[in-house]
Image 1 (cartoon, rainbow, N blue to C red):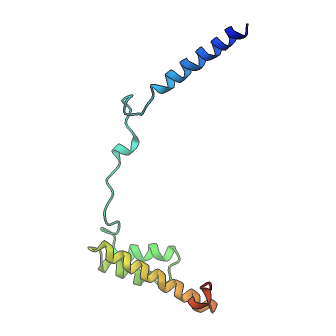
Image 2 (cartoon, rainbow, N blue to C red):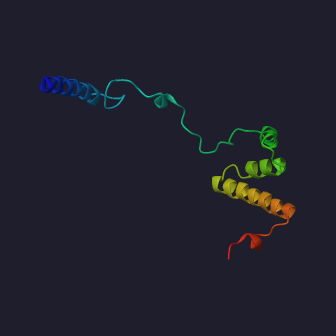
Image 3 (cartoon, rainbow, N blue to C red):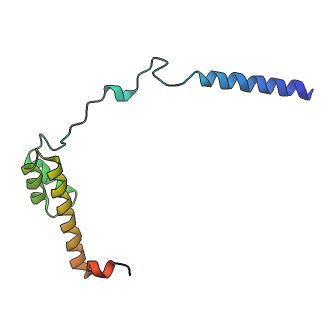
Length: 112
């Protein structure tokens, strides 16, 4: 009785495995992924944005230098690397201001 039960379990398992192995991907079964119909990404996300909208966006995010950040982005809109450098410089200014407020210096933060 044990052998017949083992056979039925192994038969059930093999049919289960073979039915799952046929489903390789959605493309094989003719179903397309939702990502196939998405718009292509823009190389510059700030391309068609006016300065007022950009300032409001940064202000809502809590940026104290929203106008300066918006000006730097719009002046460098043709140079993505320039935008990155400008945003990183403003971020560093924010960190330096925090250090001044808290009384910390970079030297005191370094581990010896």
